[in-house]
Image 1 (spheres, rainbow over the protein chains, first blue to last red):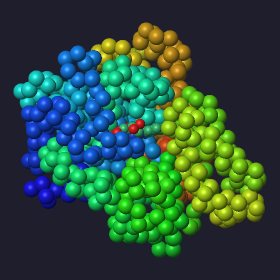
Image 2: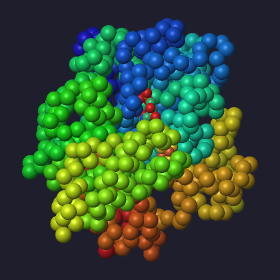
Image 3: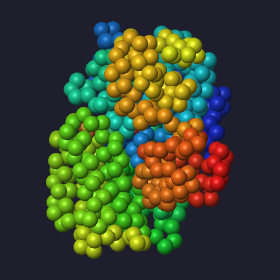
Image 4: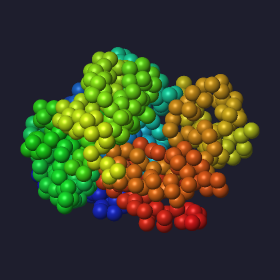
Length: 429
Length: 157
Ligand SMILES: Cc1cc2nc3c(=O)[nH]c(=O)nc-3n(C[C@H](O)[C@H](O)[C@H](O)COP(=O)(O)O)c2cc1C
Ligand code: SF4
Ligand code: FES
């Protein structure tokens, strides 16, 4: 049985995304994993997830089992403990969690039930960006069904374990996706990040132990419980475990999402699944995992798309949703668009990011419109360092510098041409 | 003054608050649902109702993108200006909407029907260019489709 399950995340998603209701989900084997988990001890559930090698799908790739292991357990642990599903999905170019939220809400609920049980959390939230109205409708219906069936609520399936699952619809800010910003937002404040330590596992929402996990990470949990860590590891082509929702947007023949083995080579995703580039377009580069990842080049097409190999290629797997840069698109304009996003979404808490990003944005705009000077390139390079890791309060600004620094490395000549020709070589005018 | 309906909905939200949890975001969303935007008066009313200061409520209200501190039209158009949509022709789409409605980003049409705002990636990058009006997502936009959607929302050429 286990051997034939190769797409644990999307196997139940219909092409029209009409989600399975609870009956259909149960009929397809749903909530069996939760039953199994509730019959085990919480620490044993943690161990299974730790052994599976699951790494967080929210962007950073932190091992999920290890993250959970820091949560205080036992009768003396502070209460209530919280489990928060990060469904803020605002990273430009990222559209993977939407598929899971709309297509298999019960998979997320089951994953959250098991995860909450493993850390003995009594309250869970789905932190959902407000623009995902369809996800909210689907989730609220599924939560009501799960409460009705006693997969949520008091004394779940006759055990002593109780869990309340709530939905929070965010009022919109990219920084809400950063886990401590998310916690601040849920407590009703501006979502500026918090200093770490203390880590949320000890001092999180309302000062209580809190775990934040990405939607896709949580959706991996039922499969791991049901079929075991060895099965999950065997799904990956490399030493990274599981499957991954890979996405492609931009000038590909077929844009979309595919659940594939972790470590699937970039070339296979782009050429076999996305059908290559649209006729007349040539690939110049791509961001492998959302707006805050370094460019990869056509020479990197044989990279297995797992956490370590993408890092060796000079970038990050990030969210695994790739944005293509084609030869009809100006690389300077491309990066300018990205930086505009980050400058607008900077939470304003720390000076380098609040002041530096708008400066970078203005310089890029100047270069793009033919008003740049060669000294501007030095200013840009300085900012890649000064807004990089260690200089800012949270990873937003360093993330913003990733596509810029790699564009300056790989597409330097295009920046120089803008400055020398005093115009964008791609603009019609 | 908060209306009875608003007070009831707010009461519902406050009843579910956890100890120490400030519900101002949810409360702002409720009031905005009924009034379209959050006026200074609304900020004061909400702060009284939550037992906090107006500046506290405003610091939250002004921080979040989807809480409007200025009046908006009947339909708020949220046009994605992020990278995948940009690659797929967002500038043309933006230009077309601006021409049709005679407004730029941040403005409302004279008949108060439409407000046009940029929004960060709508999570429909494989189907860009994308935008939302109200709770509805529109994808694979082109000029013809825009005209059709605007007409459906009461735009007259
Ligand atoms: C600026 C910023 C935005 C983020 N946005 C998201 C997001 O929308 N969704 C998400 O799951 N993680 C996001 N993250 C990562 C989270 O902080 C956190 O690492 C993640 O939710 C942990 O889940 P995981 O361990 O399951 O990957 C963001 C991080 C930063 C710095
Ligand atoms: S780096 Fe930017 S987003 Fe992060 S805390 Fe500083 S100002 Fe806020
Ligand atoms: S970039 Fe427009 S929907 Fe993602």
